Length: 451
Image (cartoon, rainbow, N blue to C red; front, side, top):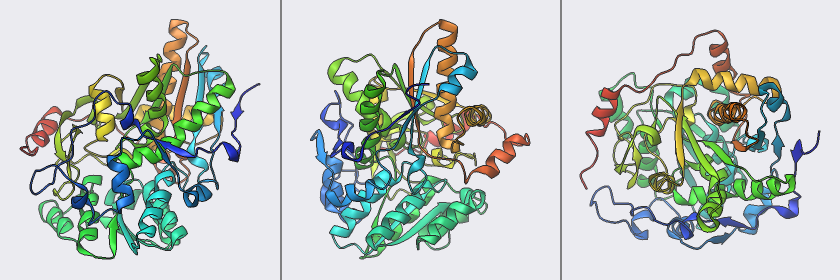
């Protein structure tokens, strides 16, 4: 079998990040101050972000150089491998070619370290001693814990309570690297106490945990806030995935007809897809870009394109995005990293403009696809990545039925070795699908900010 594993050398590690803002036909509407409802400027963000990241957030420069100190750490696992899923192709009896970029080789076991390292670096350069953040399933919390350890920065992680209980070993990894991990909502912040007063048994959500982490950072002079998805600079840092994948696909002699990534806040999908979106926008390349989300948290497929708060309490900036409403509380599905009410403003704008398409899957079909992939390829996907796996399988089946030898590329953004309890529940027949009821969606959208 040829081209089963396509590697790049260390010298081929990207030297620059790709900034899609330089090429978008329409940029997102600017973020607003949550208090004044006026357009946010750099000074509004300085209390919680370093200026290096703020400038990346607003930059429209196409290529932004990766600092040497960041590249030195990225070299630990980058460039990451690209595989052709030959055995899965055979199992599906499809003429399609299935490739996947494997980010599970990072020390964190996911793609999240690609942005955690530069975020910790820029904070260290500006003298920040401590970072506060949130995490859903735990991948981002692990990544930031490791990055802070690399640069000698303290780290506090507000972990969504349902994942805190579902995924104890991810919590253990964060603590190994010295982080203080707090189940959210907690009694340690005003935001957490407010949620617990209204919902004592709240399972938590990324929106709630963001409120707690932002409040923590805003109240301490030595602390900044770090976010693992959604923001422009996060999508920028993740572009190394797609930049490498383009070089690897060229070595394999194929260009993808469809690029797939799972989607919660958007960083995973942006990482693999935005460099291909560059080709679509600037060169007219015929490539489909597909973001895959859960049917229980269908932000892109059923949400409203509207200004909304990035968190539940209303401390984070108000951004224009597809949203289910900041008040929306998603059920405790096992893809905890996809349980977010909103999405990246950049990705949302691309969906609005028809450059990116979105689809939603139930968790039972997702785990079914993940197990089929594992049996064929020997790798166990994280539940989040499994959304991309199942979407790729469906594309391959569609190709078989249409008799098309289409080329499929997806992002396997993390391994599932710490998600085996979720697999146990699926194999025991104890997982259910939770399609979002229309009434719940309607109620959450009624509370959108008036701007």
